[in-house]
Amino acid sequence: MNEEVLRLSYLKPKRQSPGCCRVGGRAATPHSTVDAGRSSSSPARASSFPPAPSSSSSSFVARPPAGRPDPSPRRAGRGGGRPALLRWPRRSRPARSDAQRGRAARGPPPPRSTMKLRSKAAALLLLALAALLLALLSLRAGRAEPPAPPARPASAPQRHPAPAPARLPGPGAFPGAGPRARRRRPPRPRPRAGRRGAASLEKLARRPGELRSFQAVLPPELWIHLAVVACGNRLEETLVMLKSAVLFSHRKIQFHIFTEDSLKPEFEKQLRQWPDSYTKKFEHRIYPITFSVGNPQEWKKLFKPCAAQRLFLPVILKDVDSLLYVDTDVLFLRPVDDIWKLLRQFNATQLAAMAPEHEIPKIGWYSRFARHPFYGSAGVNSGVMLMNLTRIRSAQFKNSMIPTGLAWEDMLYPLYQKYKNAITWGDQDLLNIIFYFNPECLYVFPCQWNYRPDHCMYGSNCKEAEREGVSVLHGNRGVYHDEKQPTFKALYEAIRDFPFQDNLFQSMYYPLQLKFLETVHTLCGRIPQVFLKQIEKTMKRAYEKHVIIHVGPNQMH
Image (cartoon, rainbow, N blue to C red):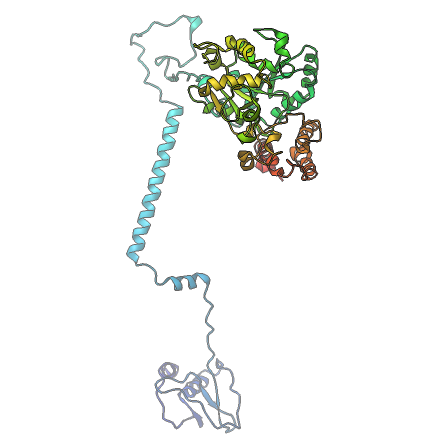
């Protein structure tokens, strides 16, 4: 009972007067009375307060403010000393966590009704997603295995007679074959290759998880057809041109090589020595030099040996629909696929494509010296020529000889006979005359597809090449073999000396950059970025295709 009274007096202390009361002969406050009671009633229990230090010099005793109990009990010093100050041990406040600070910054939590609505909406969303997933799975299972139809009773008469045993199809072909019989879907017919693009054909041929070569499944109708005429000492130039086409191209190429009989064995030998990884990207066929109309010797000596052969390609290659013709001194700095796509830009009347002879008519050759009609204001260059042979064979061309149109083969020799004393560049002049009278038949592509020394030796005048880089390099005037334009020669030697199996960047691009540093003092060497822009893009694409697609990103280190 005494302990309960003392505890209540401790919890609800009474306000005392400024004086002190006496408990057991000691000067004490109400708190000291509690302590005294505790010590007298339960001597075994020690006080929870630390012993107060004695103070003999100070006579001031701190008192609590009015209306508030004193948390610090004061005890009288032993031996009749002055009362000492005891402080109540404070509880340390725990540090707030980051989450508590965030909740304090965000303000009070939303009402309980709002939280209930949110939980209901989340539950409904999860149920809807689960239902959608189940529906998709059931639909997929239904497509994979359609349900079997009910079995026909044994007594029911058959609607169709049973076929002969030799022609019986597999089990499950008929609905009533048995209880486990299933209806098989008829095989889906494969679409014809001619109506599909290259990308869809690749997807059609490739199986899941299998890397297959696109060239192996591409039908011959979608191959790129590339023609070249090589006579005399043009064997090396022709092989370097073919090498540049194979290095960067993606689609399979059919080479049509027109050459003299003495060069045919050497072509066969050199092309067979190329690695298998490159020989599978092309097929080749070698043709003799033939002229279907006129005097063959006269045609052969026109301008350069065998150069007039290109005029007869529509007549010789009757099974080829479209063709890309290039001179032997041409180098591809990007895939042949890209220039082949220009055929899609032909309108209904266009049947051939060439680049202008010059970008500035005032300094072009045709505008200053030609003695015959030519296309446009500066003429066209036939070193790179796209042809739709099917349209050329079926067209009737206007001319200056007769008022009616003539077919291509019937027009060539009379046209040559009329202008042979006025032409200088042989077959190219004849093409300029033909398209002068038939301008609607020609598509003119930018100079970057037929970049020649004329575009840089008189100052840079091919804006497309400055913007996008050289796509097809045409080293006419023998610049690959002399020191007049070292930049052209450096590109030719870099492709010629490149080992097929080496890295393009290490064995071609970096040495080419070093060679270009030695040509900055020349007219064309002042703009090396024009020559390097496209070849750099092409090499990056080839590297990414080999490393990322064939090796895989997870195997790269």
